[in-house]
Image (cartoon, rainbow, N blue to C red):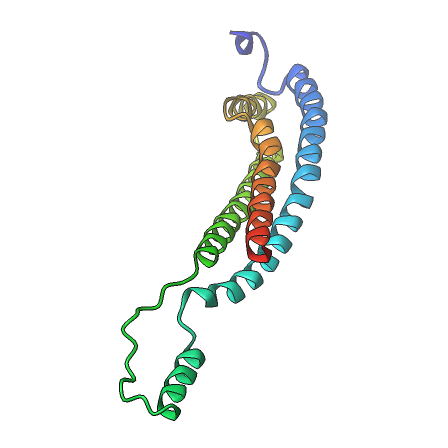
Length: 179
């Protein structure tokens, strides 16, 4: 109803967009200040965790060198029954550590994905479109309603929780591995 009393390029729309732009710039800057360190930490943590996973994953498979050494020992001792009927069973601790660390990697990558999506939302939110003052104000209003409906601030504030969970799972796996 308010639009009917104002022209598409009325000063009220320009004033609204000026005030909104200041608020939006502050919002986007605060979101980016939260998301940039999270992305860096998630990337570094995921890379380090992947290196650990490459090493620990070897414990889930039978070591061919150990099998060969056992067979050679049987031959040297003169045993005629060389076959070993017991199937390989990975250690329980190895399975737990692998499970914890792979879950940790999923949480870390999930937080990085969430942060990159949130940065995309923030960038899209702050862009303006060509058109009249009223149409830009209308687009801004719709975007702001979307930010509130999807609770973008809460999403961004909860992303570090995923990294904390990932770090805790990694620590739990490390404790199991060391003890």
